[in-house]
Length: 536
Image (cartoon, rainbow, N blue to C red; front, side, top):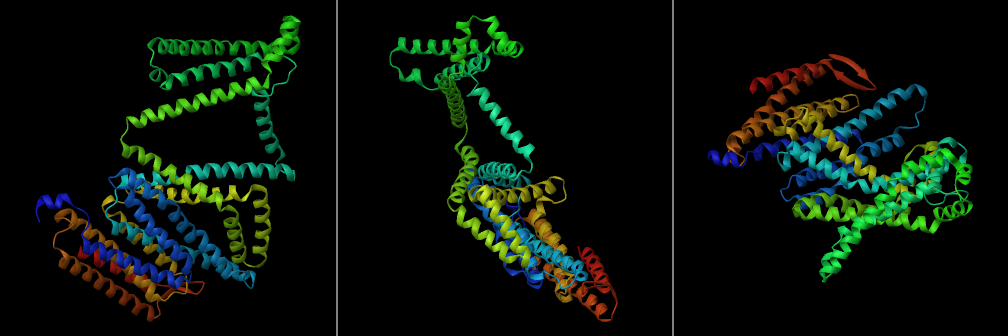
């Protein structure tokens, strides 16, 4: 192994990476099985593996292909996150509730939270193992992955929120609650519509008319100028005439827009009676008819909007022409995937929402499930299954973006090193899951094994990262790595044995809901950490 080889590939070594990932997954599986929530945990673990692949895809040098793959993984990852969190709580609530008596409620709540945290910690440990297995993710890779996730969710989340808010306002207005909110929103929409498209024909509305006509004329001229009209005309004189016409139209539009503030101020100050006394009757009536003509106003508004769309499209095409294809694909891929997900969600909204409501209602205990079914049915009827489905898809993708943004934040703040991000996440969350498992009636051997596994994952993973940076990933260091891993495991086993002996001797410190936290376990863990540090 030469220095050039080491510099060429300084990722963590393979043997240590494999050991750390395998130990983390095995310990997480043991804890989750003890927690007794297998299905949501399995779905969450699948989502965790896909999230690690999402980060890896975002790091691909082929930006367009990597962004497309990452975007396709956003929603499955979000579904896994939802299963590991909300799904776990739903399943546990259906299993643990209702409680026989109010006295048992605090203990049941503690148990449910502890079981849920064991699942979340185990799933996150699988994510850390996945990051370890796919390579050494950099902070920029996580940032790109988070950006792809957030961009993918823009279309479904935006459309879903619009539908949900509109439905809730309609429901509030119908039920008489929040009438001020509903009335204010409706009043604002109605006022805008009246001022722009449907002004009352009792006086001239010259200011808004000039604004619409001026905007339509100016934006229409600019849109025609942006399009390759003159390039398609063979005659030079005709092309020159077209260009002059475009400039004149733009000037006319600006001339119409210029007096709008002054005219609007005069209209507001004089009112209908003042205008009628100032203008001759024929002029007053003629301006009233002209400036309140709905067809002309509608044509001007749509012309202005079309001009804006053309200008935006031409600007986007020009920017794309100056940008590499990889960059364009990187930007467009999440939007395309999000739009496709929106179309699919809208197509299957009815059966999907009904099935989800029935599953949740059937999972929740007793009367709570029945009440949820009634409330959810009314909301679906008022808001619409399509809006709810789009909002659910958007929130699912948003969950992926939020988790990845959180990882990027802790990496940016220096709490997680790029060099050992995967093993740090795996060992830390595995340790937390083992701590919560100690509250439950989990076999102390499993809890101790998970604590030892957390230290082994951290120590072996960091050793592999250090060794890979020094001699390269492909160096023949397998024997050294396995010896190191075996030594760490032996030290951990010795510490666990001491803890079990002390626990069997009866040195118990506290008990919460039937779960015992042994003083011997804490002493053994402290000795374990001390020995590992001494070995390093």
